[in-house]
Figure 1 (cartoon, rainbow over the protein chains, first blue to last red):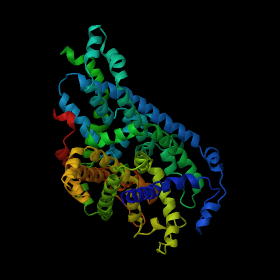
Figure 2 (spheres, each protein chain N blue to C red):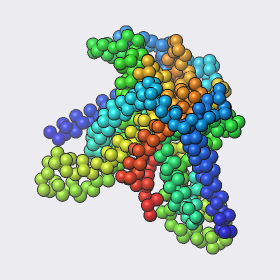
Figure 3 (tube, each protein chain N blue to C red):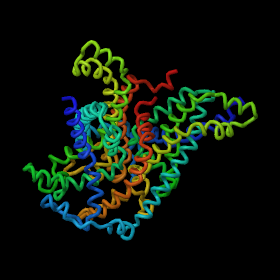
Figure 4 (cartoon, chains in turn blue, cyan):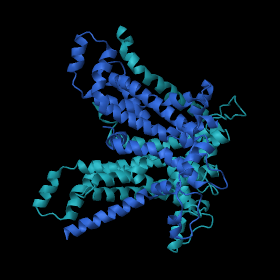
Length: 272
Length: 291
C-alpha cells in the first residue's frame, strides 16, 4: 500500500514537472519550426519539419551578435566589479572598526529592500545629466556595488578565523595584501554565490537597460527581445530561436551551479 | 583622526559612492519632483505642494492601475503559496530524483521574465497552444486570444505569474522544512501519532513564520509587476492590465510628466514600505545588524 502511494506521488510529480517545464520545452521545440504555425490538430505539432535555419537567421537578419556582445560585456563587467568592490566593503564591515558602522550596515540592508521602481524617473534624469544616456556606463555604473554582494561577503568573512590575518599583519603585510592574499582565497564559496547571483540578475535585467538606452546598437538581449515584436505578425520561430539563445547561458549556469544559485536566492530572502 | 583616512575608508568608498549617488540622491530628488509640475516642456519646475498627490486620487487611470495591481496581488499569492507548500511537502518525502524535481520546479524562476512573457504571449494567442487546448476541451476562448479580451487578459497574466514564481517559494519552504528537528517526528511516531496529526501539530506550526515571509516577499514583488505588462499587453486592452509601475513608466518616460509620475511612484513606494517594515518587524533586519 505504501509502495503504491509512493509510485502515485512520483507519477504525480513527473506530470507537474512536465507542466512546469512545458512552456520552456515549447519555446525550444517550436524554434525549430520553419514558420509560424496555427494549430488545427494535435498532429500538426509533430508533423512540422524541423530546421536550425532560425538560429542562423537570428544572426543574419538582425544584429543579434551585437545584442549578445552587449549583454555579455555588461554582465561580465558588472560581475567582476561586484566581486572586487563587495569584497572590499564586506571585509571592512566584517573586520574593521569605524564610526557609524552600525547605521552604515543598516543602509546596506535597507537598500536591499527599496523597491527599484522608485528609481525609474530620477535615475533616468541623473544618467541624462551625466551624459551617460545610451552608453555602456549607464548600464554598468549604477550596479557595480550590490547590497546583496556586500551582505554575503560580510557574513562569510565574519566567521572566518582571524589567525591567518593576524599572522600576516605581524609579518608586515598591508591591508590590501591581507585581503587579497589571505582572506579572499578562503572566500571562494561566497565569491561564487555573489558572481552567479550578480551575473544572472544582469543577464536577465530588462527595466533599466530599456529605459537608459535608446539606440538599437546599445540594446542588451532582453531589451532586444522585448522590442522584437512588431504590432502585426510575429515570426515566432525566429523570436523563439533568439529567446532560446538568451536562455542557454542560464541553463548552463543552472546545471553546474544550482547549489550556489539556490544559496544566493535564499540569502536574498532570509538574510542570514 | 588619522584612522579615518586609513584603508578602511578606501574599502568603504565603493558603497558610500553608490549609496549617495545611485540611491539616496535619486530617492530625495524624486521626492522633490513629486511636489513639482516638472515636465519636459516645463524644465523650470514650480513647487505645487501636494497637488500631484491630490490629482492622483481623482485620476481614473491611476485608480484602475491601483485596482489591477491589488487584484493581481490578492489573486495570485494564495495560489502560489498553496502550490509551493503542497509540492514542497511532496518533494521533501523520500522520493527518487528529489534534487531533479526541485531543480525543475525552480528553473522558470531564474529564466528571463522577458523570455517567459514572450512564450506565454505565444501560448495565449488566438493560434496558440493554450487556446488550442481549450478548443479540444470544449472551453470557450476569446475571439482574438486571451490577451486581447478585457475579461481574460489580467487573469491570464496572473496565471503565468503563479506558474513562473511558485518554484522559488518552494525552495524557501524546503529550507524551512529541513530546519524542523527530526526528533519531534520520531517522538510523535513513538506515541502513535498519525500522518495528519504530525502534519497538523508539528509541520504546520513550524512553517508559519516561513509562510508569513513568503506572503510578504511575494506581495512586495507582485506590487512591482512591469515586464510582463510591457511585453504582453502594454496595459491594454482598455487599461484592463494597467499596473502602477507600468503607469509610472508611461507617465514619466513616454508622456514626460515626471513630477506626476514621481508622485505615483512614491505612493506605491509607501504601500510597499508598509509590507517591508512588517517584514523587518517580524523577521528583524538580518542577524548581522542586531548584535
